[in-house]
Image (cartoon, rainbow, N blue to C red):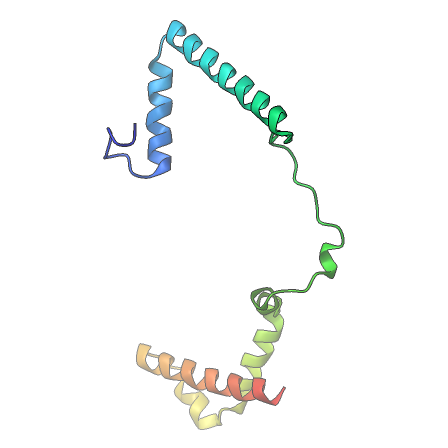
Length: 131
């Protein structure tokens, strides 16, 4: 089907197009397709029994026991940094600026704001090194 309709490249568009065609089908055509699907399902279950494999059933996923005791990845550790901590670091970086530099930033334009961001990032990096 996908080879015939090259305009439907992504699965969402393909699914939408298939649902439109399914709604247009008559009852006889739908019954024939449902019958084929049931036969295919029975074949799948029969082959799973022959191989001694449990057929895959959709359902609730089981929770991993003691999930909270597993080690966190680097990304998860990064995400755990709270916003309050970031705000406190930004506040202390702002406090490191001299009053003359602060006064300059009260009337901010784009270039000055970018410069302030670089200065605050440098101050934050310096503080993080001290921790």
